[in-house]
Length: 205
Image (cartoon, rainbow, N blue to C red; front, side, top):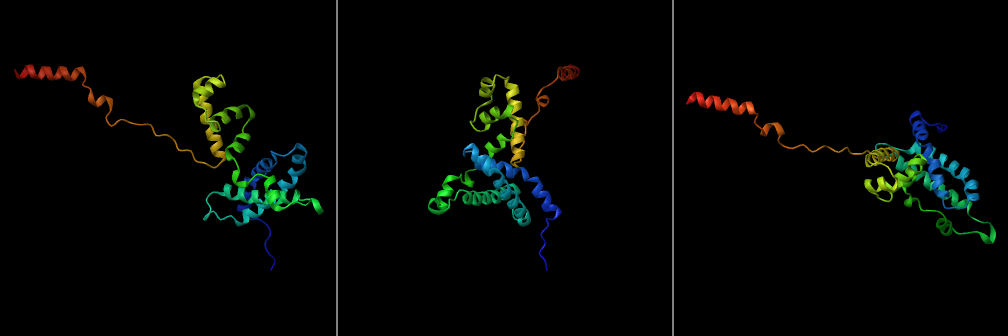
């Protein structure tokens, strides 16, 4: 019996949804290399990443792994790591070992997901996002350094946090406003209440 080779509709949706992750990780692998190497290797790395994404979409089990992005990212990174090791080998006497090839490329465990998510933002807000989420700047520092009102800095930081969280599949927890145990109106007496009590006392006298 011939093995089924086509992806199901669910698998196709998964592969299509995470296609941008392949290009993002290929750029991460090549960011520290010379420009000519980036243009030479990018197509090969993306091709290996697309194949790895297709294979991973078949084996992904949502019941065991509730975070598909992490599963697909590791599969793509492993495929790109193997590919770049092959591309950096030299024939004959100049052939390098796998350990040396591994040293030439960044480790997949050192991926800065926040940095990659910030690089995907529009260029005009990347500086604010970097200061806020990489450098840990306060809202007052953002307001001062970027010459914007404090309220604008606060709104921008909140909007950027939401965009980055959505890019990384992180659910933000909304703050619950604090409420006092006793309402303000319950502890105060109105002047009309005092007047009624005085009238009642005079009638009793």
